[in-house]
Image (cartoon, rainbow, N blue to C red; front, side, top):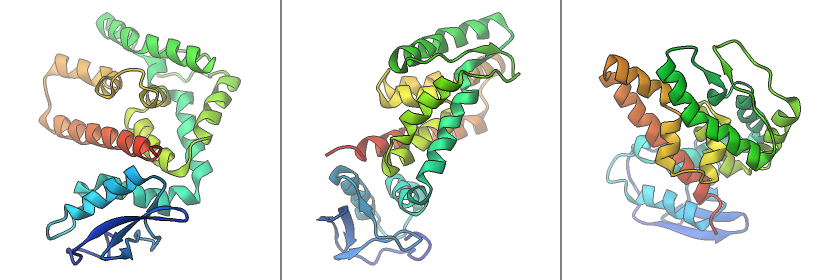
Length: 237
């Protein structure tokens, strides 16, 4: 609805159950996505979150303040039409996962990466009975085909809405393993984000804080947290 509607015209926002889920209504009429798909969400908690964003609109619609609505639109208009392709794309991150590619120097950065990422490699092995290989440098290392297939199966089982939230966790961290660990509550979510930023934290300590980079990191972190919230809400009863 973002492209067609710029200003608030509705008085009431409601959530009503329907055959396929929970519909979000403006003055009794379905909200629709940019592709004119009715906004029907799989769970009431997710529908209520989307409805709350529409209730909070004062005068003009600001998509930046409506993260759940944006993801609902993406799920309905894009991911639903190419769910398998999206799942395969996300699973492919395991082939070049962030935590598998380590620095060659300096020693302190190598140590920090090992402390942060070696436990994740152990976790994914214990959880999914697979083994990913870490390497030093940027030269590609081939991962075990069976291990990649196993991870692909895990991702492919996700429904359209969980997969939409999961997409942000993978792409923002560059790590399928970190994303999987996040949704399985390996550690608190804020810590999971920091595990994806070992290199950036090192650079800040070495060269100082870059204000532009700080702003970008703030936005990415917010998107990461919102992606996780969308994932969880899409599975709540």
